Length: 454
Image (cartoon, rainbow, N blue to C red; front, side, top):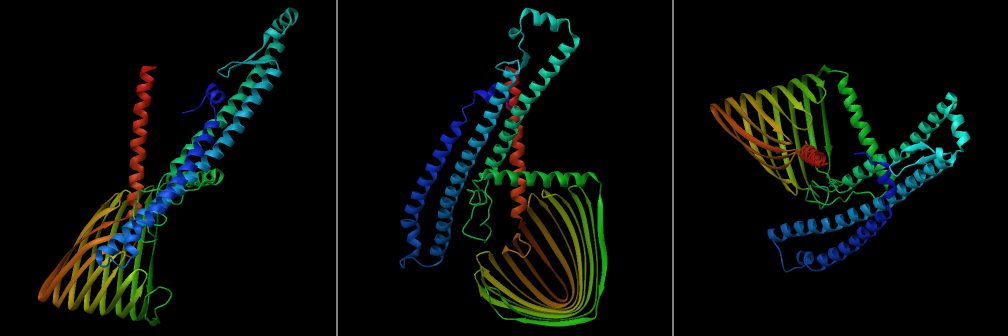
């Protein structure tokens, strides 16, 4: 909603400085609480008197709570800084509006309390008024002058309105959790807590806000240009190679060897605004073996697998922005394979084992809504083998996975599996969009009631 001349002239922007002082004081009080929490509650987990799984769990939970206290301080200080900068900018723009009004009056105009400009006929003598009355060019010049001064004042009011909208946007961003230390990157365990990444520099915040709007506008403009498609076919082979790396710098050690006789991959993608279709067709003939091991900051992990034969993959996906999508996939394998894996860490646990010789064909399908997905797979086996796998944690794709798979065959058999996934980035964006929609709807309803009573 746009501000008017009277609102700008009658607003005491010094109150923003008063509010900034209170937010700064709040940050100091939160610091006291954080220190007291660390010296009393959190300290319990650092003593020798408590050990075991409950102690480990409590240590993470207490660290997460203290992180929120620290993040709350960052957020409070950022809001204080934004309010101080906003006070300075609003005051400067109000002074420019006052100056524009004074200049208009000095030029022979009147400016009402509502900001309406008119020619000040009272300053003219009766003879001058009579002369203007009988002079069409003079009356035209007066009309043009009034229009020029009205626009000058309206532009000053418009500048305050634009700043008001931008400050509102950056304040909303400042109190939205950036999750810069979440999802395994730090002690943050809340996706909707305080914002440890908040900035108190209004100029920088305005630049970031403008950049975000420009990106959104560019994406919207690109969507107007119509659908786009891309893809291609790639054929390689034969080729072979080996790599061996030791454990270092917090990374797992690994050993890999492969020999591909033939590999063909065809990919395609169709994009039309937020709607996208994609597909892949892959055929590989060859053999490979690999092993990973290590104890890193993420936990303990080990994996070894080997396979030889022919693999095929055909997959299609349909997605709509970050709101959701669906997929279907079929895979085939003829040859032999064996694998053993296991890991335990902060981001989950998984374990699995399989051994198989023969041929298998699988189909899988699933969907996703607002970052939460579910899928299932079924395989038919002709051969001999067994497989079991359980997953609980974060995968290489950045999603959190919960699922399992089990199968057995002695001549004829098969396997079944299911999995649930959570894409925290998509979930956060969808939740933000939903919150914006609710807020906008509530605002429209409120404005409707206010308009009705007006």
